Length: 458
Image 1 (cartoon, rainbow, N blue to C red):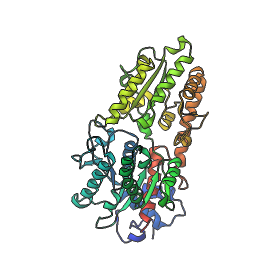
Image 2: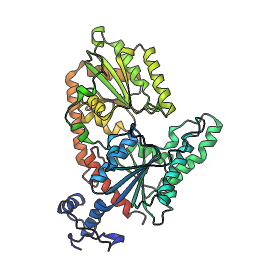
Image 3: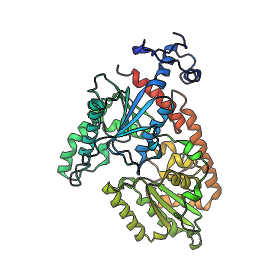
Image 4: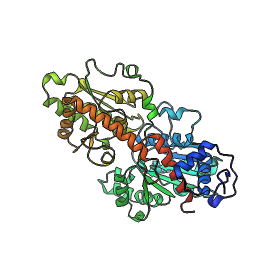
């Protein structure tokens, strides 16, 4: 088979495809290697150009999981894939800007189903809503697709198996859901038992499983004992550097948000959820101010920003709790709470100041202060691009103070952080590693994964 032939190789050989452009053929050779058989190269071309991908996501709002889904969709679409995002809830006034692009099709079904029953049974309702979305997609939509990318809720995977022609399913595990809830009562334990069983059982039905870090991969193996023989690949969340490389609009984006005279700004970007431990940033700021002379306190300010949804009781409650904590610590004048910031606001904050969000902050030349566990262990180089600290106010305040007192250290760490992101982006172009940080590298790694997904379990 010559490179000029464009039939789909492998088990689906004989299916004719349109002539692929030369740049795509050359890219296939570079990406897959010059010694790769032509059949695999033409298969790669067909996957890049022709694969119809549907993303299933419970709630397409503003958060880390949503950011990953949107970036993955944009990345694959840019490589010629046909992409749709299906969700049980979508609000055009509370979403990432990319989802408003008319060329990226977003379909919302089942939003009439309840998200809870009198404030309880959130997990059960989420399961039912996603099962409905899957049933609608398979039996009522008439949509043709080749690959399903689903995340957060795996219970929809058995429904996807009911399709007339079996489709490949890729499941992205951000973190086992059963570890994100508490079981303080017997009734809660009883309620969660079948849900936890379903989560493990249905996760194992996917053709490919991805996790967001080596840390999560370890938790995955410890939590899902029956899936010990299943390989979970690591694909780090990506960073769309184009967003950060656009012309500066800081003045307009930050107008009215920060008090005059702010000379040192710390930024915490997290969804307004208790598990994010946002109170730690406030406590660290209070400890920092108490350790500094009066003259150095004046210009220090903290911005707490993140996804916020009025429909989610925890978001509303935790926002109020944080405001109350700030008042108790006498920080009302040196803390700004920002709910669901726009992309331009987030970029503006990251461009100018310290960050407590690893990859985005490093790309913007901001030193990072993070907890010494989980994902930051893999993204932040302690002492080089920032500080990894114990989750205590004292430890965080010491790191913050060090950055305040040593401006050159701030600059050095910022430059080292950007270089780290750029260097790790290059790693993503090799098949032996999926440690990708930028959207371009995510595209290459994602296509490699689609290839493996197509060949797996057939």
